Length: 195
Image (cartoon, rainbow, N blue to C red; front, side, top):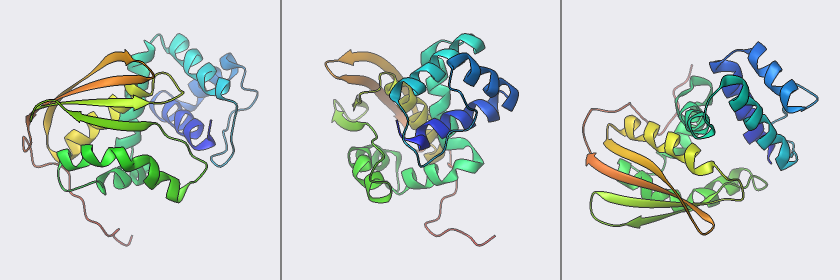
């Protein structure tokens, strides 16, 4: 697993629960160190061991933990680069959803060695959309639910999201759009402002 994913997991636990909690979880998982390097590649089992240890120590179902991780990736100020990358997908939440099918290619331009799940969109009706998330890592569909819920809020869209299980090699996420302009949404400008 790419170190950037593991580092994000570490940051999530440290920021939301505490640095001390992260150190206990890393020890429970038998990681052997407390800091993942963002540009290294680690054995996949380390990632799953950390997730299992975190869920056990925090007494959280894995689905909830992973969904919270997805929310964190889009809402934490230190990770605003993730939000910005996703907002380049379009001016509306619907545009954003349809841009997800080429997200893996966009990420590969910046980090060729980072493999992210392939996302496919199926429009069932104008209000109902199904996302298929294809990944070797089971559970990424739950991370995706947290990400798209956060992005719906970012765009000011009211929608319902549900992880509905697996179909073959894909995790399915159901999206029911209720109101495209429920609230004003967060400001977004293409150019970064100078500090």
